[in-house]
Image (cartoon, rainbow, N blue to C red; front, side):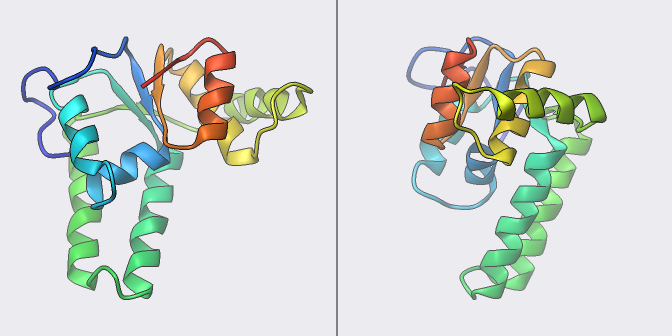
Length: 155
């Protein structure tokens, strides 16, 4: 994330917050991907972005995968991961932990007959709702659809 303390995001309507970022969104703030710049501009300056420890681990996995496949130099991967941890330590994000009640909430979603979710999607939804998120930013269509059906706004 370029700057968590900058002014309001440019362009588009402001998302209602708190705003939960799933892994597909968080990774775009640290690794260059399609839509990374637009997302960074949209979120810059917000103080109500929620990330989970699950998403942080998944970003570490994405960095590791790119290091192993040669698309990200080792030093750059280490810098990006340290920047993410630094942003977390500096309070750039509100944090959502994974606890037994998070798993139970995710399991209730997984057992629901109307939501075709995978485990990580259900965990992200449980984390978002437990954190009191009003909106979610995701690039996963299935997760986004389920989030909307649970009453979250999609950003």
